[in-house]
Each structure stands twice: as structure tokens, then as C-alpha cells.
Length: 171
Image (cartoon, rainbow, N blue to C red; front, top):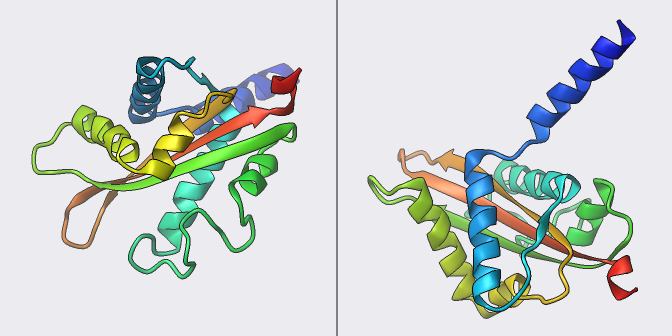
């Protein structure tokens, strides 16, 4: 019975923390973008994914983008920096990290693929976001996508990318 309970809890945690189809697709587009720029793909990491999901939920719960009380969307009140969030979810050997955030509107009848590709293009058009996406020494990363509907009935995606360079990268 104990083994069955353990297996059930493991299965439920995998389901709870697994990527959605949207997240799998945009992570693939992110890696394709890196390859197009002569870089290696980034390895998906479940713990980093938890940090991105945490931040998306935090932003949404705290009024982002229009009523967010902090001056910088990359900050939180308690887990202030991206490194703090990543460490909270178990990556303690990080050397550095980076983050991209987007609040993307879905046009009428626009496909998920189009919105996700447009998100990568938006980040590409921002020098600071592009720098994060093109960091050469990234080891692991993840992207969280939070589909939302505003009070006017418009579809949006809140998207967070976290990338991490691990300490062992230097060895």
C-alpha cells in the first residue's frame, strides 16, 4: 500500500508540475531561436519551471501589468530577485540567471502558435530580453505560459522565461 501511495503522489506531482502544450511549444521555439543564432539549445528543468510558474502567478495575483505595485515586473516583495525564486525551488548551485516577461494579446482568431512565436519576436525586439535569450553559457531553463481573459473578454498570455547558468558550467 505504501508503494502505491508513493507512486500515486509521484504521478500527481508530475501532472501538477508538467508543462502544458503551450509551454512545450514556446520552449521549442525559444530553443530554435537560439540554434538560429548559433547557440546550443537550453535543457528544460522542472525546478526552473516551478520558479517561472510561481512568478507568473505572483504577477497575475498582484495586478500585473496595469496595477502592479512594484516598479519592476522582475521583482517580488519577498522573493525579490529571479535568483531568489530559483533557489526557493531547489536550484542552489546557480552562478547566474536571467528572466524575460511578456504580456501578450491574442488577436481575434489568432492561433496559439502565432501568439507564442510573436512572444519570441517581441523579446527579440527588446535589447535586454534578446540579451537574456542569447546568453551563451545557459545550462537550464523553462517557460511558463498563463492564459488569461481580461474584463473585456480579450485573451492574453502572461509568459515568463527563466534561464540559469550553473556553477559547474565553469568546470
